Length: 283
Length: 282
Image (cartoon, rainbow over all chains, first blue to last red):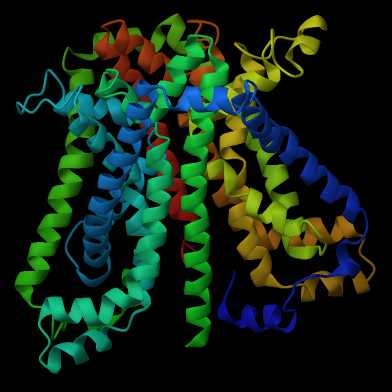
C-alpha cells in the first residue's frame, strides 16, 4: 500500500498541512483531542505534582529523604542501570545475529523477542519465579534477591535495544564491513570502527527506553523481589506501599522523583533521535 | 518489527569477512540468553500448569472468580480500545494535518504515558477521583458514582497507559501519504467527512490496525495501574492479571499458571496478528 512512489507526494507538501481539506471543524477536533489528553493524562499527573508539595518543600523533602525510600529509589536506579548495560551488549549481539546470521527457526527467535512486549508483566514475573524461584527444578533460587529484580527487568526490557538497533543495522551496507575486513581489520576492530559509530544512536535510544521502563517497573518485580525494605524493595513498590498506608502525599513525592528520572531519559532519547535523524538526512 | 532478513539480500551467505567462529559464538550467546530468559521460564510454566493433569486446569477455567475476571478484562478492553482508537486517529490528524500553536505540546505529550510508572498512574487517578479526598471524586460520589475501587477507575487507568499507541502508529503513515488525494477529493466536491472515510481512513488502515493491536495487548496485560485503583476485591474488581496474583498469593499455583497461560495465549494471538499486519512497514 505504501510504496516508494508515494514518497515524492509527501515531499511536495513538506509540512503536510492541508487547510482546504480539514479546515471544517478543525478547531473543534483540536479542542477535543486536547481536552481528552488533559482529562486522561495531564490533570491526573498535575494532581500528583500538587499532592507532592501539599506539605510544602519540607514535606516533599522529608518524604523523599526517608531512608527506606532512598534505599528503594537507589535500588531502582542501580538495577535499571545494570539492566541497561546488559541490554546494550546482549541486545546489540541479538540484533546482529537477527540481521547478519541465518539459521533454521530464525523466525521463531524473532517472535520470541517480541514476547515480553505482549506478555503481561505479572505473568513474566510468575514464569521467572517458576524456573528461578524457591521450587526451581534447576536449583537456582534468586527469589527475594536483587539478582531476581535484575532478571525480571531484563525480561521486560528485552525488546528495546534489539528492535531499535535491528533496522539501522539492516541499512548498514555489509560491503562496508567487508571492506574493513579486507583491509586487514579483525572482527572486533571492524565492528568498533565501522559498525558501532553508526549504531550508537539506535543503541542509546533503545537503552533510554529500556531505562525508562525499568525504573518504574512494578508488575514483573513484585512477586520475585519479596519487597523486603532496604534490600529488595524497588521504587514503584515503595510508592504502592505508601498508597496502601494512606500516605498519598508521600507516595506523590516519590512519584515526582521517579517521573523526573524517566522524563530526563525520554528527553535525552528525543535529543539523540533528532541528531540521528539529521545525520541520516546528511547522507 | 518484521524480520529484516529480506532487506539484507543475497550478500548474506557469502560472508567474506566475519569468520564462522565469530558468527557461531554470537549466535550461541543470543540463543542461550533468550533460552534462559524467555523460553525456559515460559515452557516450565506451561508444563507446571498441566503437571497434575487436565482436571485442575478445567476447574480453574470454569471457576466463577476466573470467569468474572475474564469478563471484567474484556469489558475494560471493549471500552478502552475503541476510545483510544478514535482519539489516536483524531490526534494524528491534528498533529500532522493541522498547523497551530501548541501542536508540539500535543506531540510531545504523546511520549508521556510511556515514561510513567504504572503505580504512579494509579496514584494520579486516586488523587483526582478518590471518593474521600480526590479533586472530583467526592462530587461523583454524591451523585452515586464510585470511580476508585470500581470499574471506571480501571478503565481510566487502562486508557492512560494505552493512550499513545494508535496515534504513534498513525502519525508516520499520515505523514507519508501526503495530501494529494485528500485535496483531489475535496476539489471534486467531497465533504471533509467523506474525504476522511473514503480517502484518509483506507490509506491509514494498516497503521490503525497495528495501533489497535498494541493497545489491546497493553490493555490486556496492564497490572500495576489497575492494581492500585482496583482495591483488588475478588469477584468484583479483579481482572485476569490481578487474578493471577491473587491465586499465586493464595498458594494455588496451578490456577495462577493456568490464568497466566490464558493471558499468554492472548498475547501470542496478538503477536501473530501483529506479524500479519507488518509486511514491510515496521
